[in-house]
Length: 162
Image (tube, rainbow, N blue to C red; front, top):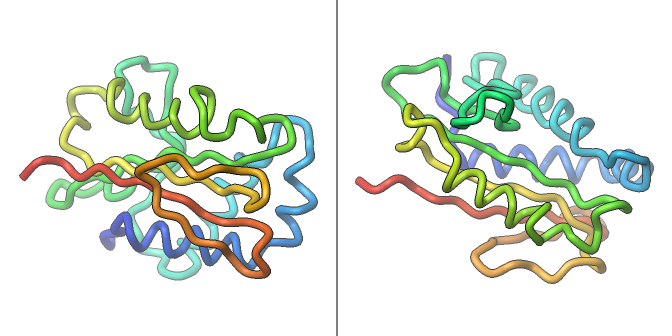
């Protein structure tokens, strides 16, 4: 398997978003949101770039066995640091709470406080897709407007102490 770094993941996720703006515009108002669509699309986009990338979806990395992370990078390698990724997609139903406790902030809390012991030294990555006219970016997040400017990607990374 080939290592997939957190910055490569952010790049590929952003490229997927840029290339799929029309589909995203059609999906974001749907009941239940579009995070599942994005998760599958990003995964497919990344493995099409390199089918040997070490990327898994819906992996049990939390102390609560009923919770899974959206992506686990490098989880099949014993020599490369794992990257635990939580994805959040702003939608019609969650647009007001996208950055709050049920959105990006909640995902960061889960990443930093709920990991199983085996994943405590992982790189932690929170990634979100947002609509540029509908969100005030939370502190600590980098962000980039994609394509025609209607959507953007934001991310925050926590590297383990060395």
